[in-house]
Picture 1: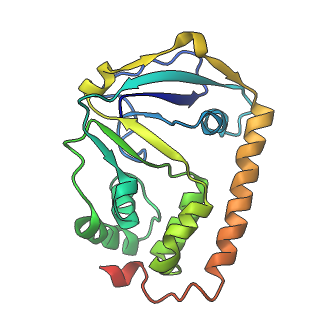
Picture 2: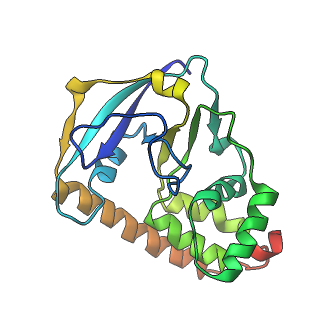
Length: 215
């Protein structure tokens, strides 16, 4: 893969990626999150409804010698299992019990990887996930639903070795206008939810191979 350019959208003008930091309840656990998409990074920089401008930081990652896990090369169920390790799609007792079984059946170990690459669980994702764990979505339309959500691909820097291979291009720092890109984020989310709702309500959703039947 060589050297790749990645972007980090943030409300902070100064960011210092450090090994061991980050939220365990984020998509892939603790780590520093970036994307190859500049426009996505701009939206992610201002998705919070606090009306403040954001910043996009440009980084260079030397992937030589790094072990990268790409969830796009695995089943969508494997990716969902990884998210279930870190994030809750529902707060019911049923979900707490079944999600553990789901992770045991479809999850994989990520301990050996320096970088994790995969979709980002945005607001649209949680709409899908809640419907899925309520047995309202057939597995045959799940991948299409996620594609409609426009989740975007992100990279998570996980290990100390990977952090050492990440460097910022400080001269490329960009300011992001809240009014422009928060509106884009919201419009895309509204469009996604409308189209996902139509697909869930359509005859193509047979609701036979659902969350609980996969266990």
